[in-house]
Length: 427
Image (cartoon, rainbow, N blue to C red; front, side, top):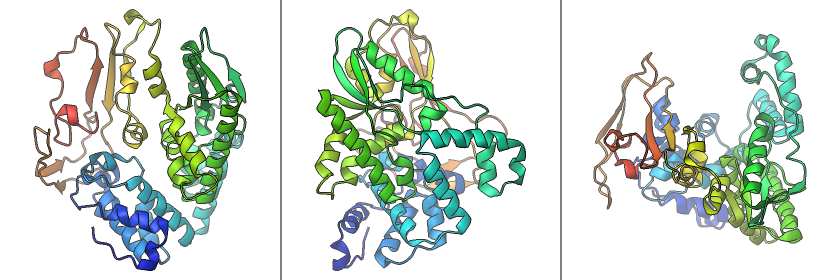
């Protein structure tokens, strides 16, 4: 992609990085068929390629962002499936992150939208406030019809009950059972510990049973991802620095083998601390050191191995691979390997089909691919059928032992992108 940044603009390290990313894009369009917002809306500007053009023009002109442009950027889910599909290695994640910061600084949003965004940025990263807000939302549900716009929707999806603090999130050290094999810090997070506190409890039990001493560091909290995606750069960097300092203190007290994260979006964020603070002379090296220690819990367990679990004790489970795990962190096999070693165990991995309204005859033109190792090419035309009233069809890839009754002949030979099953970016 040709760019037109001036020499003065390229002196800014952030614009220089964006320019390098732009120039990798070859307009191939592989990203389009993997983008959920483009598939649903059928608008080129709601695709990664379209957003890249919008961001390029926005940064080159260095003018306040128009509301119409911000709308398309706001719709991006940051699922990063486009990065998995891109043959040129375009770093879309850092491009859209930087664009959100620019939008937040230059766009004057309507007052109600500014209030809502500030409210969410205050509430969600703070578990105590978030818990109180959920209780208030539940009490207000009978009156939801009187609230305006988005606030009505937020109240409508509030849970019927809210759990109290689990106790695992308090600063403390959980000793390893039997011989200590690792000493790890656990990111307890913010939203997850309120909505699903059992996840942190189960993580502590799993790690301690397999020889890990688990440290919940004082001062560690929200990873900063939520405010980061809102474009609030200062708040995101403050959260990152607080976590880095907390985990450094834990490391000084007894060493750390890993910083364990059990929410994939948070893991993607923590692993990016080194990039976020790369230009900070005081925090750059410290952030890179912590980012190198960050591990998803499945990565840690892949190294430890499951002990004392027989095939008969393993139930059949369904595994949904989060986009931030498979695309953001490129972790594909580790979560499924826990079920594969034992006989008679099986693990579904289902890919949810997009079942929202799709334009009746949305057609995307794609170029054939001829990369080494690919046995088939993508179809020259990818046609998405009109929505039907019947349930959407989902595809599944199996993680199974040889004893699984599923016949190899019934495993799909290709995925929705037209690639062989073994090279499908969704599997």
